[in-house]
Length: 169
Image 1 (cartoon, rainbow, N blue to C red):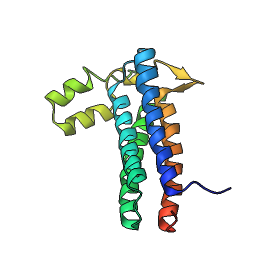
Image 2 (cartoon, rainbow, N blue to C red):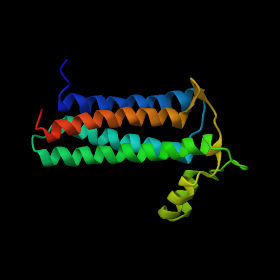
Image 3 (cartoon, one colour):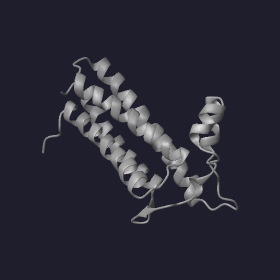
């Protein structure tokens, strides 16, 4: 079995971004009416960063190794960001505590009224609805599902990295 080429793998990552966004926004948010908490929004941002860099790599399809590595690093940063936030969110869900964390008044309010460093600190400490499990699929909370998605994406990105380092198209 031959492995898909560099461009095809990046198209697959772009499609994963679109599918994940449709699932999160179209199904979970608009159909099931589940409002995303700040940590959910940050996971989406990681997915979008990954997908934008993968889409650029697919469209440009550079032949230079350095350009491919730069695009790969950008995509991997989005993946690691999304995975890290999803892991933190899952930890908040599944580690018992005396008082569930609260997210507060909402991400939009925080961004408008606080410095970004304070917003990041507040969000990542899991304040508000972030501690509630509103919905599950096969026993997995939404951030646990996101963690699995980011692991799959990271595995695809490792294949891409191998192709870049071995100068395979």
